[in-house]
Length: 111
Image (cartoon, rainbow, N blue to C red; front, side):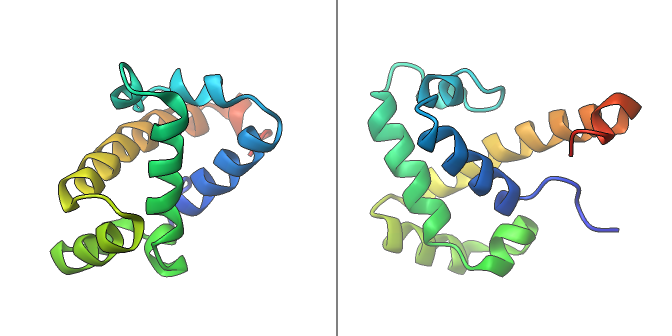
């Protein structure tokens, strides 16, 4: 069974939120706590860079991202491999929350 919430989904939502001018909402998203204390615009550019440096396959299945892929993503987005690791850990926290929400029958109608 495929994961109900992937980095591809996050990227799509991320782009929609940015287009609507609701970037402050991203800063308050559960699992994205590392942007606290950091300039929100800089944090969003960093996240966008990491997402854009991933292949579609990596965004659909982030569990395949190993050390070599982390290095490539980091190099492509101008960050350190540790930043990619932290971003993936934050995403995994967010994914766990989304899985819980999706498992509630009410949320199935919205996704």
